[in-house]
Image (tube, rainbow, N blue to C red; front, top):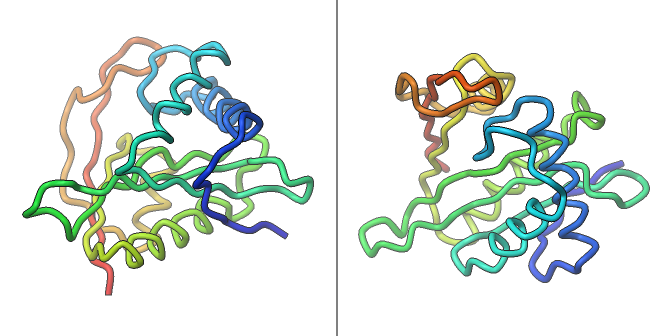
Length: 169
């Protein structure tokens, strides 16, 4: 049994577990800001800073041993004319925990959290042709288009990204 829960006051153990998920995903080729797998210390420092951002909300999914195996975040738009929207970011499931509906659980938690924050429009981007693209399309996100050569991948080549949105009802 898994459950998504808000990570509002992370402990040092939570940051280390989040870093483990990030490192595992990047080592498998996830394009989430790194071109090569970051050392655990760098990943922990990144998470500590990211979680401190007051415009960011983060959820996790844990396994039966209560270890974090996935995470997803929402960055709330702060502009006065954008307070109805947020960006879905860092939807990550550790490679050892994939294909167990954790990503879908996280997306549902993010959408519920967005509604609680009064957000009615979600936007996100992901690598074209990725498993994540199929996840978002299957969850009701609408593809807007692709931007060629948007991000550098772990092999060094530039890869297109696709933009999605979802209106929450």
